[in-house]
Length: 444
Image (cartoon, rainbow, N blue to C red; front, top):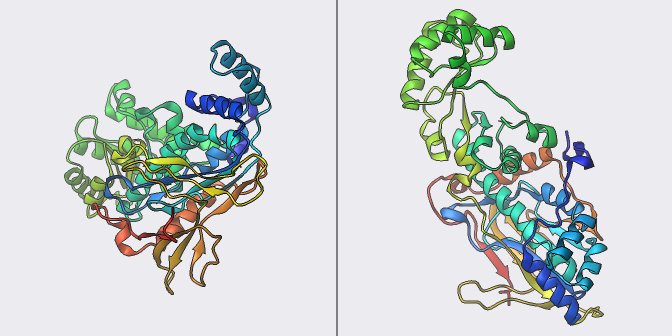
């Protein structure tokens, strides 16, 4: 199912998902006459969080959808008028607001590095500046989740992962997190809205409450097996794990699908449960572990007889990095609204936060084995070498979406992008970015 499966009636407008200062700048720019100057904004991260080796682009599809709903209708205009946020001239401009510019971006699922221009917005200043907060709120969240999820997928080493963090974050952040995790390689989600809206496969077992509801653990297991079949997953750590496993196999036999363990010393309990399952003849019954897992605990469990993991809190909070630290900066502008010449490179000189002026292009340099060597950022449109590949693709042209991906396509792209990184990129220990970012020429 594509993200367009939800009707327009289910989608709220996005124009007020913004900061007050964007409309302050808009009003002042309309007053000065600079609002319609052509401008270029870029989204990039100055650094990767917590010494990570790479970041993952996610949220582009959600952003394009939000852009299509960025409209100031009667309700929004009435609010701005009554709250005296902007003046009458600005309200008149917003009434007919439509994005008519161009947007380029890295493909969803792509890996990025410090300085990578993962999104480039070219439009009149007035059209582009009001998109800052919406763009950053979506991309900062989704990129952070996908970056953490990708590390967890690597740590799982081929074992399936279920995203189950809905109860640990904002209700809509949960949906976005499920989508971002799926792009990065998670297999399923517990969140049904993510399945409905983005086609992410869903799965679910049961909670301790289900067991406690019944007169005994045996009654609870029997009810679940009768209703859902022997392929279901039984939660076995409500009381005594060994007793629960024996009861489960007695009721389901060797065809029991899986057991879930959510507490205790997971590595020790997993070994004991595997041994017991095998002794009882349930050699094909899988073991799924949950309970405050992150990429490090998943990696530590790698030698255990485990068949899958469920991850919640660590996933939806970016495993310690809940934002990707992305910024949205003006890098070029025209000298006047009538200017037709090249745009003037612009960059701030703030201590600690210097910018690089000029509209950027990006190429992933690779060797003859298609292993990534560097992130090459340049001011001229690139002519990639035989083994290199251009990273920026048109997403919006003249206000119309031209480069939207399906969630499944983004997932496949991430698998390919990750495979081309050097082997040390997959290390969980802190370190430098997997490849250097090279600016040619050294930007202004």
